[in-house]
Length: 359
Image (cartoon, rainbow, N blue to C red; front, side):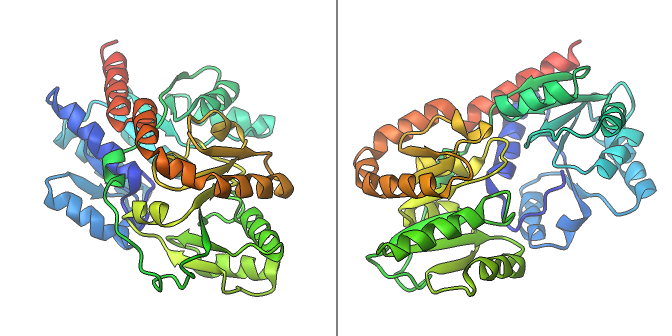
């Protein structure tokens, strides 16, 4: 996996839940991280994984070393199936060269396949010919079907560890410098344009000019300076109502601190964050892009993607109806567990593994 975030997040918890499900059949995961994860903040939680008995290794920046490493791991741990996440084309080529043809390679698609020119399409189809694609949502599956018609492909919606979201802390009034009686909005902004942070900044700026006491918290694990520069390009400065904050592993603390979570994304696969926020106390305002428009949410407010005026209307509506969500939180929890429980995801993935391996 090409994953080196500063916090575990729902992604790693999904893999560990899958590991628990596999262990029921006497199998299990071993985890091969990208080289960057060895030197980033992620090395801390990866060490914690190792202390709990998880088998973890790291790729290098050298193709031949990676091939030797992967071959050793396949033999050492009797690997029967390789499942990739977020990997680059070069990383996949290393995997492809190292993995014997009788061992299936599943490529998990967390975002849409982007259609390219005909020559690029031909090259990609040749490179990924061996892949079994697993899409994280129906809309991602449709993009794979379009771009890789000859590949075996499946779709399993993401699941969320809701138990993790039941544990959170109270945020003190001065921790983020936000006035106690102000309305608070949260967005995850590491990819400024893809996540639509520019749209959120413009919308909240307009609504403040209309007299609303609003604060925008932009949570980041990386790209701090880049995001700050982009905010300055829009507003001329970073005003006091914009708070660029460090991401935290206890993400439920943020969801339950703010009134509204914003996801004005231009591209998503199936975002964990929207489902997590939908379970939490905050209301959710999100763009109607294909990966988000069919999400099952109570107190979710969809706006026309790129339309700031519509975005503002939905923000005002979400804020007005926030108290209603708080009074119906138990039914919200039941609804979200019914549709996105992580245990269901793990069982479906194990069933898929068995289907692939029993052929």
